[in-house]
Image (cartoon, rainbow, N blue to C red; front, side, top):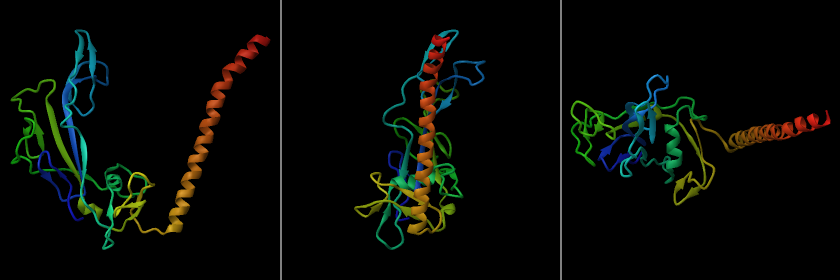
Length: 227
């Protein structure tokens, strides 16, 4: 790793190739058990409105200048002069990524309490920024937490597959893949071929199901008229 990931807006740097910023808003959220509709809580998913016995409660939009985002560091492949693209680095943040047997844990980033402020958000504790609110939160207040992929869990041998452009492997214009082991071209080709065959079978099954769905009403209709 040549450079760790950083969130320049909040001046947060980590010794990890992946930094995740999670932005949540205090808003009206529908309770899953349906007993209390329109309860308030922090959520990273925007729920435009909720209907209650008192009427329709409207949530404000998330601000455009502070949203959930993923930041990437700079990772070089050995001494080859090639670097991993953001598309490949992002795969380290996937939960249960298919080609990684042991998924690196995403740990909350600490040491934020002494940081500055951005867009009115200030450190709430050692791990979180929040809208200054005193004792109670109001609808529209924000909470920001950062998570970094555990660098210690990334030690090992990886194989990156993808097109190379301007010294970067795995740009989004080509097939990109990542394995937590060393594989050769033949093994990758067989894996890719097997994946394509599985995908083709799935498409055929879906096609047959769609045909049955379309034909079945016609069959029932014809049978009814004949009777």
